[in-house]
Amino acid sequence: MQVQTISKDGVKNVNLNRRKAIHERCLNCCGWHNGEVAKCTFKECPLYQFRTGNGKQNAKDRSKAIKAFCLWCMNNQVGEIRQCPSFSCALFAFQKRGFVKAISTPCFAENNRIEAVL
Image (cartoon, rainbow, N blue to C red; front, side, top):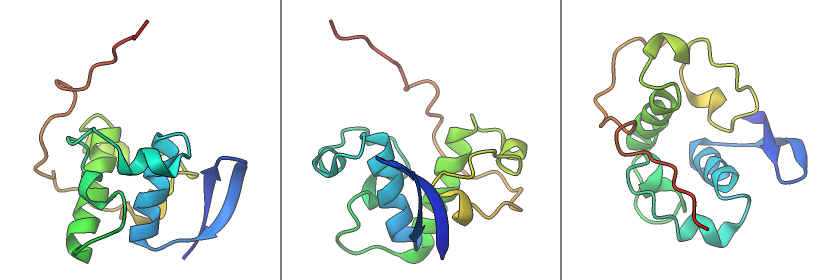
């Protein structure tokens, strides 16, 4: 699927499937450093086990992880997912904009803290 997404050099058109879209999103999160994706320590992220694209991966589990990430990104507000404005997100095309059932995911808001390191 041809998707327009953010890259290190700006917006680009890429051909993505779910596996590549997850990796692209993880690259975005890590500042486009491929080595940092592999070293990621945020195990609470729904995309964590799929970040490198290696190993056995079930397509249905990848789809569930994308839905869970979108729900987390929208602060567990299911109605907001349908109104997501992030057209340049690599996962945008795969989020199934019509889903309305709540997905059972742990609440990341409680565990997600930003700490300044000086």
